[in-house]
Amino acid sequence: MTPRQLPDDLPTYSRAALALRNGQDKPEIWVGFKGLIYDVSRSKLWKQGRHYEHWAGQDLTRELKDAPHTAYVFDKFEVVGKLGR
Image (cartoon, rainbow, N blue to C red; front, side, top):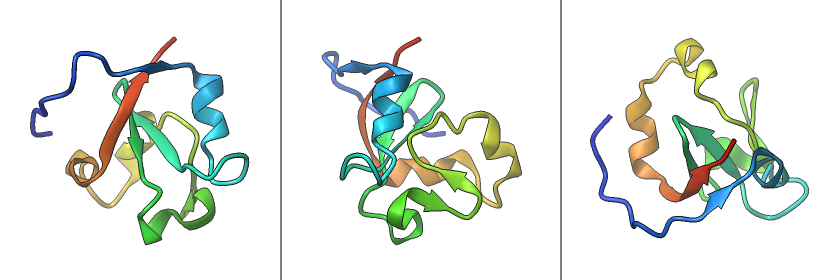
């Protein structure tokens, strides 16, 4: 994945906070990947918080190996925070 310049003051969100951004509980649709949280709300492929068998509001790092695309797909989405433990 291409290195990105990220602001030093990115907020950190818990897994519980990420889970609320699932396209159902709050209007944002976020996914986690390799410690970062991406806003995929504008993607037609994530409409209603679902993309094929994947659900928003989760860390998708382990699931990427089953995807037909590479990690570069995240380059087109805004990083909104870091995923805390």
